[in-house]
Image (cartoon, rainbow, N blue to C red; front, top):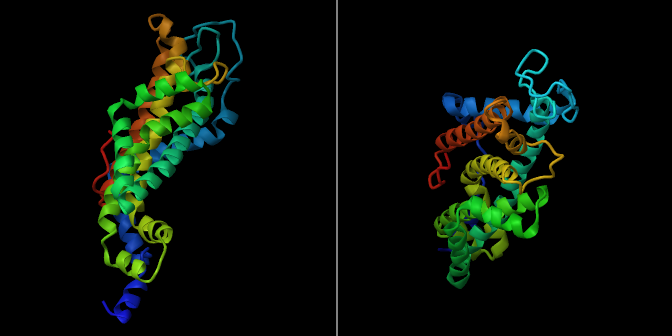
Length: 300
């Protein structure tokens, strides 16, 4: 390749900016994906509840009522628990905790997993083998079992839950990114940038990363749902947040001994978890189909 051709190739933009018409076509395709629209609507509604829900709660989540185990009624739409606390108010307060954990898990696992996948795919050799064996080790353990073990060792609490669940799910990001980088490192613009003297960090994070954001974003939507599900499971097992913090998993745990006489205590937060994870998975599936992303593991 001549100097002129190298320079010309190096000047090719590595992060194409969609035209207005291209953006409109993308939006039309996204609107045409009914499951993506439904999933987005669910996520938006729950996000609003997480942000302003506690301020709009009809009752104090921790206020006790002398009338225990009240069935769903006009005063308590989702009934009350064994302490007379309003279930709906506690669920609205728990939405913020669940979304905080889910988003934090997605961001942390994405940051670590993307970095590991970039390094493994770009450099290859012994570094790729080392990272791949570590990912195989994570893959060998069921994610929830791995998270339970880490929380049991390092202790409960929101911070430890986020770290444990993020480590359990970072291999999903790493494998997707590694496969994409293996393909991109032989592309013309990558070879041209290397020939022009660009450093490894610039090539990976300035030239390659923008071109693999689509599968990363899709994987992140799945990770948020998995984080919420894992936090609820750990809290249900007594390894989650402080008992004074209302979360969906804690409410289910509190109602498991009263399922026959007060079914609403566990059923409504369980439905909230199901609808939330379903909405995130529908959104992820719709984005995957709209962006034509291949190689992202189906988490539904």
